[in-house]
Amino acid sequence: MSELLLHHYPPSPVAEKIRTTLGLKQLTWKSVEQNRLPDRPALFAMTGGYRRIPVLQIGADLYCDTQCILRELEARFPSPSLHPSGNSGISFGLSRWIDAPLFELGVRVAFAPMAASLPPELVADRTRLYFGPEGDMAAEAKDIPHTLSQLRAQLGWLDDQLAAQGPYLHGSDPSQSDILAWYVVWFVKGRYEQAPELLAQFQALSAWIAKMEAIGHGNSTDMTPDEALALAKASTPTTPEQGDEHDPQGLKPGMSVSVAPLTNSGESGVHGKVQLVSRDRIAIARHDEQCGDVVVHFPRVGYRVSPT
Ligand SMILES: N[C@@H](CCC(=O)N[C@@H](CS)C(=O)NCC(=O)O)C(=O)O
Image (tube, rainbow, N blue to C red; front, side, top):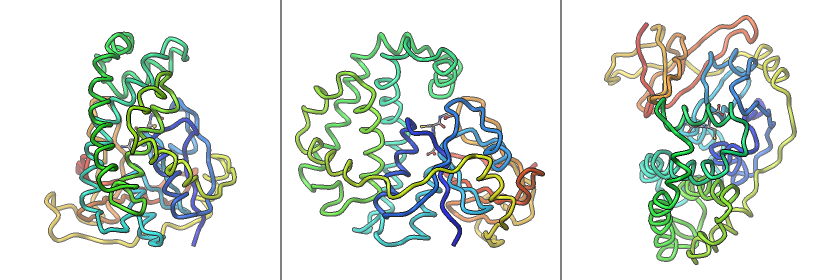
């Protein structure tokens, strides 16, 4: 099987979700470091401009969005499982809380108080991305006490669960649910100055943090974005053509579509022809001179597929 390439940058909390998954499964991977601002020509040539990080590349197949990456890693490397107690359904449901409202509180707490010390173009970009066109990071910084009241209560839910079921969220083994909760806690812990005081209020969560940190990131070596692009060009996509007779939109292999995230940040859609469609995934085939034929995968949940 081709190597696993993770396009990411070290401070990315969402990428920490996947780095920890690679650690849990003790995998060997290539770390392809991308710019923090969207100056990523080699990656965009492959994905067709999908804006977010991380992206997993396996040869000429690209997996966008951590929902999709988690499913692909679990399918290819089932042991140890991300769902040792069979809680995959509840865990994807949990991701709709953690990846949206909980993560947004984490972004406010981790980013707003230190925004004045960060490059203004980074602050402007992330404000638009996470808080929309009307977003105001200075106002977010002033509102931190209220934001903390929301975050503290929700960290309390994790602490209650861990105290009752621990040492992990679903019992004796770490699972996808732990990894989801972990990336938000990792972000707040690493960025928010008063995180030690905040987290010390939670005994079970504090014990869990030490366990999550110990999982690590597996074994990685570096690869440049241009090397990753060359590898895509030298590879052939392996995603089979697959339809879904129950698809609610009537999508079929060969149809021209655009796939765009359902956000209010104006992210553009990626164009291509449907290669595979299923309940949880849409994969589109595209061609670019720089990388040849590739197949780009997205989750269905959180994305709009529009026939073009
Ligand atoms: N739904 C996406 C969200 C990814 C996301 O928002 N990632 C952040 C990095 S932590 C991002 O892309 N920020 C803008 C950027 O890096 O250009 C996923 O689960 O992968």
